[in-house]
Image (tube, rainbow, N blue to C red; front, side, top):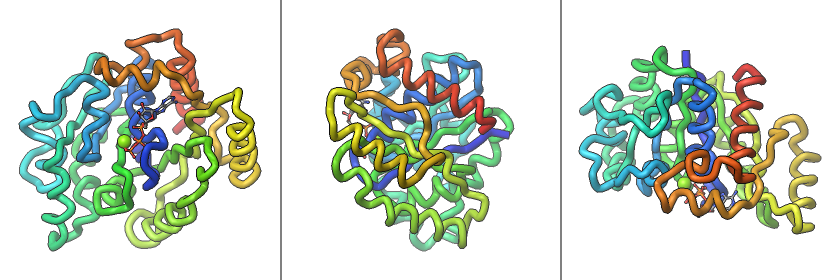
Length: 254
Ligand code: ATP
Ligand code: MG
């Protein structure tokens, strides 16, 4: 049975997609059977693997509307153990088209159940909002991974996210857990990065991953080559950090 992890934070640009892409790749190289679900109409996770969103005939949009199964829509990646469920801008329409649908929050959960036995991990890259797409991801997930950028406003919006998690636990998914808070774009030469990281650890303690993702230019260059950082520069600090994160998650038994 796959562990389903939603990578979510309604704040934009905090490293959700970078984390989804590189964590999924790192789990796959550890020979964990992994499915990466791109739940963002921007389809950045797809581009991170060199998939052109204009070429995707079937996407997670068709899955959510019940027109196609995950088995029909998923595509193979460069990694033997990693499949991708692609997205494109059609997904913007799903938020509106599902408004009147029965159990609209549970569409993804129902579809993922069909393939859950085929994977060890299912990683869901969420869009920067707490709309229906993110709610579908949090309803389907066992846990949420929250990337937080090491900058001054890191915790802004976090109480809103925590409130949403509590609502989902109450009404849709009682077993949803916080897998961990992940500090991203940490700059060791910058005092502010240290301050923010200490503040978050003081506040959230053991809920913060030991692994920290450094600010690393290789991580930002890799997507423009359509490659996860492991295939772009495996010795970079960014690649090493995501391998560490995968190890931490696997060893914690998640
Ligand atoms: P959105 O909310 O738009 O979906 P996001 O939370 O998915 O954004 P990313 O797209 O992963 O965030 O990252 C935002 C930008 O920061 C990207 O240009 C990405 O390449 C860059 N970036 C992410 N993590 C790092 C890092 N550790 N070091 C350097 N650049 C990074
Ligand atoms: Mg993103």
